[in-house]
Length: 199
Image (cartoon, rainbow, N blue to C red; front, side, top):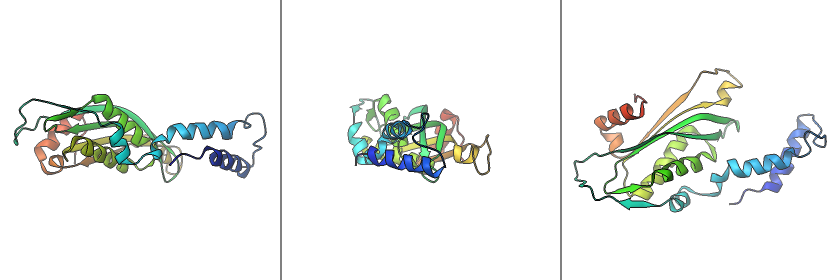
């Protein structure tokens, strides 16, 4: 599904009029076009399903280390910066840090691919909880196993700039799949390694 920039321009012009301003004045004349181009960029992820994003970044490597059933070697990438927009108010979710862990089971994914997946998933109208679930789902498909964990911490302008206006409030979410959901020892390892306590 392609983003309809013509419709965005039209609707942004209508919003400016609804706010009581003149969309033809010098400062606003190009605003509908600027917003349309910005939305095309910041909502790029809406063009793709999770399955399509998995296909886009499906680059894994066989790792010849001895992965026995009891091995719990873990890969952790932390502090991936992303931003997103809350679907409830179209408000910015910012200062977002993503930490992703997985158990390789003989296959590893390129580290930059994890950051690209997180970035693309953020470029949608989102909930923070869903961002974690989407990242986990995509990695499960690419890696072919369920043992994935995603921790996010972020600030929501719908809480900091309007309504309750609590500027210091942050939200932390945990998405635990496979052994990360079942094994308290793994939960402690990822909490310690990522610097984000679970519980």
